[in-house]
Every structure is written in C-alpha cells, then in structure tokens.
Length: 240
Image (cartoon, rainbow, N blue to C red; front, side, top):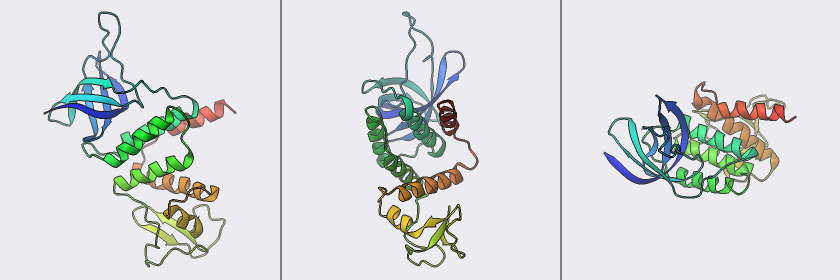
C-alpha cells in the first residue's frame, strides 16, 4: 500500500537506530500513524539531514501494510512554524494528547481541521484558554468520551443551576447530596449549564471547564503522565 500527498502534522519523533526516526503523524484521512523514517538523520553530501517541522502542515508519502509504515517523503506545505514562550508549551501539550490518546488508523477530520486552525493561530498569537478547552472537549467527543452535561446521570433530571454536582468519567453528572460548596470536586449547576451551551466567557465557567477536562483526560490516559505538564511546571518555577 502506497499513499502520496497526504496532509498531516508531526506529533512526535524519536531516534531509531543510527540514522532513522520513529515518527508519529496526524493525518487528515488516515488519522494517527507511526512510521519509520529511514535515513532521515543521515546528512546528505552537503552535510544537511532531512528536517521534520512540528506544528507545520506537510504532505506525507508512505508505504507498507503493517502498523509501522515506511515514511518516504515529507514536504512542508507552508513555511515552518516555530512556537515560542507560552505557545510552545500549549503546542507540546496538544501534540502529546493526540499522540497518547488517538488510536492508530482512525481518522478524525473535524479534529484535524480544528488542530490545523489552532496551529495557524499559534504561529501568530497565543491560543486563548476558551479555544484550548473547546479543543479538549472536541478531542473527547471524537474519541467517544464526550462530556454529558445536560442531565444528571442516574435520574435523567435536568441540571439545576442552584445545585452542585460531581462528574464521573464513563458515567456523567452525579448530584452531590450534602451540597457543600467547599467540596473541591464540586461543579456548580450554573457553570455546567453554561459549559453545556458553549459559553466559556465567564471565569468561573472557564475554571470549571479546565478542571473538568483535566479530570476526564487523566481518567482516559489511564496513568500515563504528560511530559508537557511537567515541563510547564518547571518553566513556571524557573521564572518565579
């Protein structure tokens, strides 16, 4: 099987043997793939090795029938994108989520288009938090883990703005019986209703969205650590 001129992005690379790379790519029509890029680290006669640019859309060409494809060509479609400061950590985080959560050979064209728009935005300005939260929620939806925020899971009753809820991954919202506002795991019904309607402008809703998506993403990571989070924590410590 041979595929040519497939749009995609580099998610992750690691050295492989003496001159090659193992490359995870996210493509429009084939989803996430792992390829071996043979000889990509070997300098040519001018002493220059082939370069794969993260956050930059490419046209890829590969061949092979097994899970590990052979990447034969990678041509940037646009000028390489170089992220800096906060944008770099956001880019690392997004790529790591896709690398660790997407199944191989499972296309997600809506997610790809959202990702492409994010990378275009990242190249010119920082991604705003509401946009990042929407990406996380779309990722969960595409994976089949979409957030169910319109009703309480056990009873099917509509969410009440004046009530407090837990969110249990794989189940949904659960009404908190004691209704103690200081509960660290509580979400207010008002914030849940706004989030369900895609209204992330208020700070309380944005905080709830960040806490909720992190809780659910961590559940489906199943113990896998996100290196990008640790890098960002170290960055904050070093700059305070």
